[in-house]
Image 1 (spheres, one colour):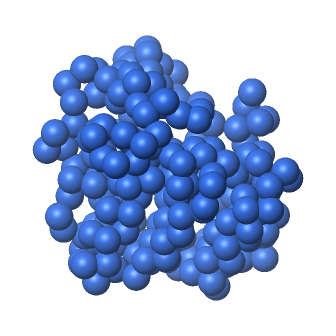
Image 2 (cartoon, rainbow, N blue to C red; image 1 turned 60 degrees about the vertical axis):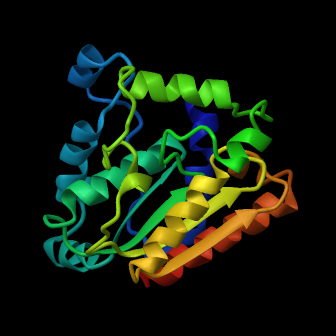
Length: 231
């Protein structure tokens, strides 16, 4: 299962490789996170990992290269990982070196299940409204995310120090409208945004790159945007 989940990450790495020294992934939550929260890693665990960005660059990267890579840092995630990326950026924006890019792929950014895209795609395909509601209940431990801009990044109104943001969404995804709303909020705040919604695609569609020219084209668009941002 992990190999299937990681396929889009590896494919994107191949496309962006000239501008990225090493692409890493938080594949497993820390053991203490699993004990505290059966749902997996929480924001504070990811904050600790991202804050230790020297370790993420790896022991083989020389000091001079580290300085260069600190000037070319980006943060990315898809689905729930995009939620973590946006929340972690907000938590660490005053501590991290300036980021070049934030990339969000079919992001989960709010627990509002009454948007037009949630209504249109309530029964899927693939991701449904009831399943998304269940995931949010687990993530917030049943409390909901109202007013918590770290759990629900779309609820924020202030975006100082946010970098160029690349957002890729899918037309037949319940999360489509929150991706568009987040892009609009960032643009109104003066943040450079590249936003694309892939026609006819569903949540998780980047795994269909070998089978779909629409998915392949969206993948190429995302890779080109990241290369440009990190150049």
